[in-house]
Length: 202
Image (cartoon, rainbow, N blue to C red; front, top):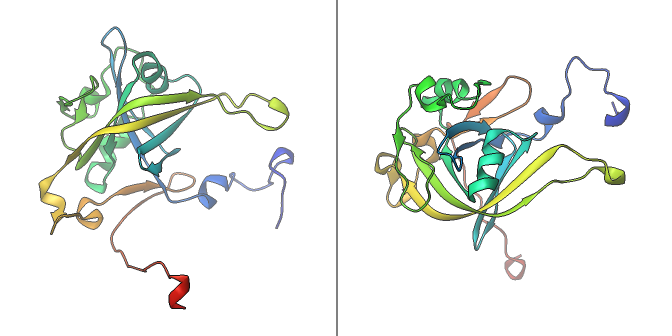
């Protein structure tokens, strides 16, 4: 089968997000200039650089997370994990501004060290970030996508000692959660290793 997205796919649901998966979930906490706290999951999220540590999240529309991050220049990425899946999903609710998603989902606000937004105390890891760039990507022909892309540099890292093994962060123990297509999610339950080949050793 082949289709052109602009002309429709003829399927019960668009398979795009199922194809581009699994995607890590950016569970983003922010705070507005006025002190309103927001917590929401974003499946258009990833790391894009290791030196410096840069992460991005993409908001389809001017939602609180992107708006607050742009206002204040700070956000926190909280690790989404299998044990917190239901509470993570609860924070995706379209609550009006001023309603605490932390309280709604039964989560605890923990203070960050460097940035103002709180982190999720129950999360197995958190990345404190300062915004380095906010862009609004365009489609073909300069058509507005309505997307706000926030890039941040990681300035602080919190790790739960209970999921550390011999100095390594154990993603199976943490149960890292990812987003698939449709209403589907997946958690890391097993891993395997492959070393990158070296040309001179072929």
